[in-house]
Image (cartoon, rainbow, N blue to C red; front, side, top):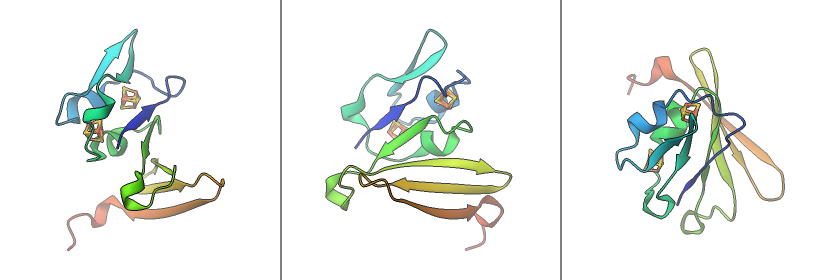
Length: 103
Ligand code: SF4
Ligand code: SF4
């Protein structure tokens, strides 16, 4: 498992560095980059923290990902989790962060 950071979208807020439990993300030229991609265990904390949709998470073959990626787009309290498959199709799962403590 690993992530990809789009340097064009990254604004250098460095929030992803702060939440990565393995300190795998570093900063270079005011942009974030994944220094140790092989060590990523897929907690998706960085994906969720990025308000600029700059981080894609690769869905591994072990969970049937088949080259799919997932990222999140914020719209107010709603998080749109977009899963993009290699054939171009997209599935979106919407989560309202206001409900996160509901269950
Ligand atoms: S959280 Fe997103 S915008 Fe901020 S540094 Fe990380 S990748 Fe860049
Ligand atoms: S998915 Fe988790 S372990 Fe992997 S880089 Fe992001 S915060 Fe770190």
